[in-house]
Length: 508
Image 1 (cartoon, rainbow, N blue to C red):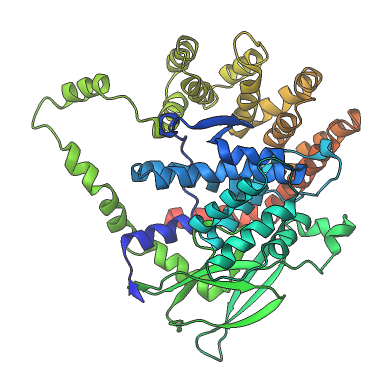
Image 2 (image 1 turned 45 degrees about the vertical axis):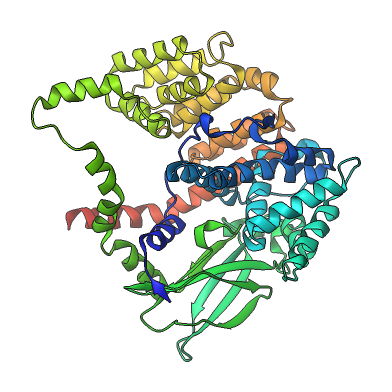
């Protein structure tokens, strides 16, 4: 085992607590890029689009995955590497939070959840293969099929050969077919063996967010699902953490011997969330992980910001004047601009909202316009939110593709959730006419507006609304109902208990 460096602590914290997702600096991309499905990625990777529909999904995913790797291999500053990782993490959180994903042969049933799920799987594949081996395998694949078509298995077989040349023997097709052709994803449970030291029990099962859904859908009652899971783990205690190791989990239940694991050590699985699965632990291990995160957290944060603090320093006098001068000399960094704008709009008055609105109209940079527009949705003023929703339908003011983001971000604002939901229902005919043919966008809108609905009344409204427009975007609306039913159930079971716990914590 090696010393627990700050990098290890950072890895541990990032794995358990999802970091804030930052925007990727547009200037970080290199010139050899092309636009593919709304993302920037290397031209060579986008060539995979020439393959079959199944591999089309992979092409899109590689774009998302590759951008993170590009930032790392180009040696750009650490914060930019973090942006890439956080963007992929955000994709993973979104698709792992989707629990009703059903594969459909009808392409019209496909939506952006299916595409983002592929991005997470490609990231997992690249991680257990090793990034350099994965990239070499992709190059071989593109070379072999550059003048023709290819099927999904062609990609898997080429990657298996690349892995074999590196001395590793994994049947990529066998592994990935379980992830791409089976519904959903697994949850791993790691249990400590109380009778034998250094031993753990690892189980896997099909993860169902809403347990009650099993009684409603026959396909969810299938207990035969199995995945070959590349589980990365580390073991640690108060002063040390082990190096990362990988365990392949293929059965419902397995016993494994883990080095350095004793009664005082915790175990952490799925490092950096590279795997497309959830991980659960026994109560003892959860407590050890919580204790590890709490211990010396202030010292850790100070270490992280110390260099910045020293670099900036403080003037001996004229403090306010220096702040004013600094505001003109230093632009708000792009990676925190969305947070700064949003916070300002939410805490300050209507004048600030109008100022941001004016900036939105005057700027010509597309990325800046998007950040400003999303900041406008952060207001606590319901009148301003209503005004913005209505303006979003004016194509001369807000681009059609940006209007969806306006509605979704208002729905995520606690002060605007009901406004966005009512607006969505009232304007559905207009919205469906505008986005109905753009399957991904329509599905994104339905999911975004309904994902935070959590009352019996809202669930009833959603079901009644579906009956009114029976057959329109049925798959997306069915998933929305699953989401809201799960939200209502969770709220009923845990809200009071959670509020009591929070109240007790605040009092102490």
